[in-house]
Structure formats: structure tokens, C-alpha cells
Length: 86
Image 1 (cartoon, rainbow, N blue to C red):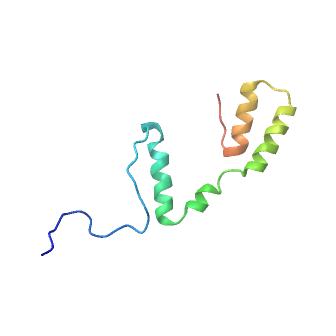
Image 2 (image 1 turned 180 degrees about the vertical axis):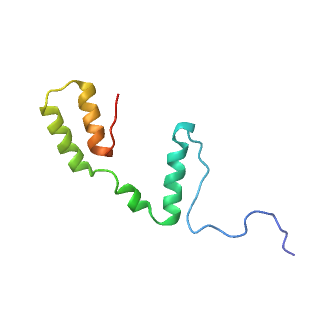
Image 3 (image 1 turned 120 degrees about the vertical axis):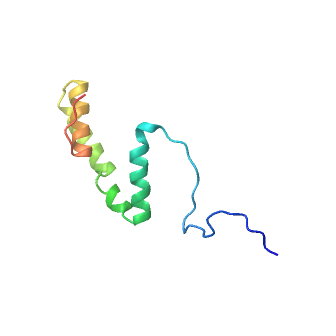
């Protein structure tokens, strides 16, 4: 005789685990999780600048000889495409 032990009954098509995350990044983690489950993770990742282009932009920004704050603001603006003020 089979003893029912509770639980979902159906295994998800992906491996999963329970992870504790800091509250400030909870929204971002949930966004990534939803994108993975929807199959749109590649679209979400493509919003960022590729590493090679980011490095080239960083080199160009360093050549401008601005302050560290202005340089970081410019780099973050290039990578994320949003105005950043530090």
C-alpha cells in the first residue's frame, strides 16, 4: 500500500533550491527567476553592454582625465543606458 506523504506531486522541469537573499536585491532576483521560467532570460541579459565594449568604453573614459566620480557616472551610463548620479 502506498502511503501519501504530501508535497507537490509533480517535479518541476528544472532543478531548484531554497536560497536566502538580501532584501535590497530581492526584486532583481525575482525578475531573473520569472524571466528564466518564461524563457526570456536571453532578452533580459542582452540589455547590458557586452564586456568587450564596456572595457573599450572604460578605456576611453579614462583617457578623458576627469574626476573619479564623473568617470564612474559616465561608465555606468554607458553600461546600463541610464543617467546615474553618485
